[in-house]
Length: 230
Image 1: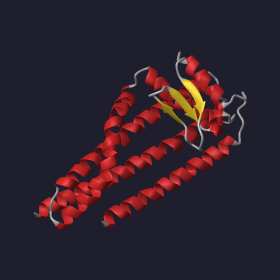
Image 2 (image 1 turned 90 degrees about the vertical axis):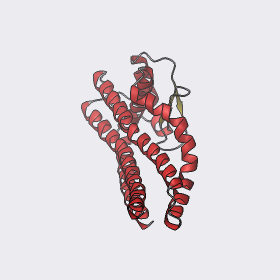
Image 3 (image 1 turned 135 degrees about the vertical axis):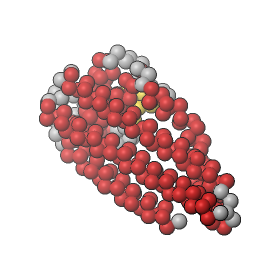
Image 4 (image 1 turned 90 degrees about the horizontal axis):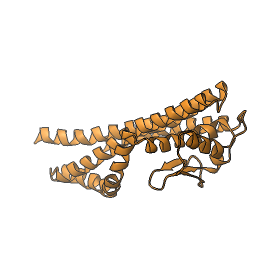
């Protein structure tokens, strides 16, 4: 069990560093006002309209960096700092979340695949921690591999979900940056700041996905190692 704790600790450290860099970047860029003076809400509204999307609502939600697009009710949810903000970071986040709305409207395949996985994953995630914990104990004390195999299968599904999320997030940022550039919503300097902020936001998903993969390989090695000893 020491191995899984070490893996978790290493990637938790990486995740904390990436989160720190993300927050510092957004804090830095939030202090730089946009030349056009638009708020995040106004930028989101403009991007949706430019893409012919009129059935998506833009709402403000509590919290910091809680921004997300909800395909179930077609809402772009922006934190107060982004919704009311008139900075490069607010523009970047608002346009990114609208990038997801554009993906939804254009039936982007990876987003559809990811959304289809959500119901199954939500059920599996309720049982996965217990299955892994009990499975490891049974493997060590009785040699029974069934429960751990089930837990690993559910963890593999969660890992797959985290990797499918990556192209969805990168594509949303690509759409956001392309739109801001084409429509001259930001200056060249502001565009570079938005690009930098979105890159660090994407790195949080990359770190999480790699951390899950490392844990998955550890659990798989437990099963394989036990088999070789049987």
